[in-house]
Structures are given as C-alpha cells and as structure tokens.
Image 1: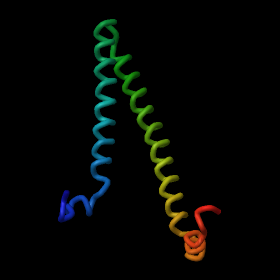
Image 2: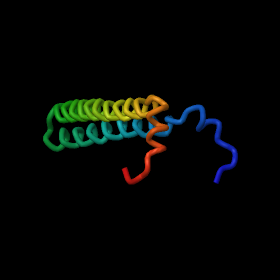
Image 3: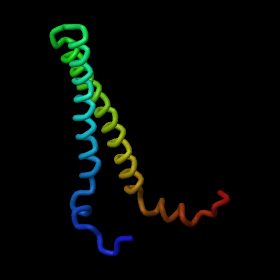
Image 4: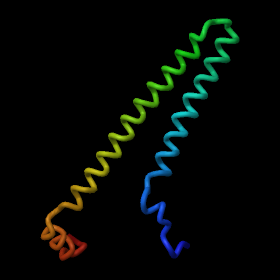
Length: 100
C-alpha cells in the first residue's frame, strides 16, 4: 500500500498504456519483418515477402488502433454523458426504493 501518491503517476497516468502500445507496434512489425526475411532467404527471392509482410503488419496495426481508440472514445463519451445528467435525476434515483 502506498501512502504518498506517486507524482509521476498523477502527472501522466496513461504513460504505461502508451509505452505498451508502442512496444507492441514495434515488436509486431519486427516479427513480421523477420519472418519475411527468412522466407525471402528460403525461397531466394528479393525482399518481396519482407516488404509484403511489413505492409500487412503495419496495416493490421493501424486498423486495430483505429477500432481500439474508437471504442475507447465511445466509452469515455458514455461516461461523460452519465456524469452530466441533471442533479434532480440523480436525487430521484437515490430516493427510489430498490424494489421499483
């Protein structure tokens, strides 16, 4: 248990997620480049597989990020709408009995 909050964590709460996403991008692209390199060496081709798999990995990461960030934005917008409800609605909900 931490009694004093970490100042870095308060100033940049999303740095861990951002760092993880960046590493994921780099590692995925590096793996696909490596597989493409090996396939080019095995089949004796010019860097066709390496370039093709690099493009495939890059496009896949872009599409994945687009949908992931879209879902994240939708979740945050929903949370903001829930917090922006009028106070009377919140009071009325708290005054209701749980049986209703």
